[in-house]
Length: 77
Image (cartoon, rainbow, N blue to C red; front, side, top):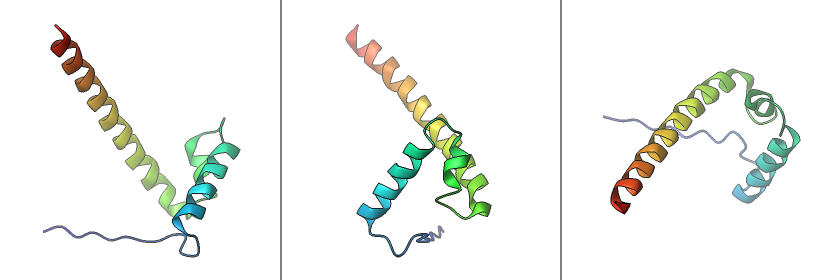
């Protein structure tokens, strides 16, 4: 059994406006750590959770990239 909960942290913003807001905030913090940019976007107690999840996602994506490159190189031979 799996339960999924979605929480809209910015209910007043449409998806398009939220996307623009996120992009603007990340541009504002372009040379800073991710956690600093998140203070403008999320409740403070969620930031460590999001950072932990983003690290896991990054590790997954890097692993997928390595596997894809290996398969590509193998297929070219």
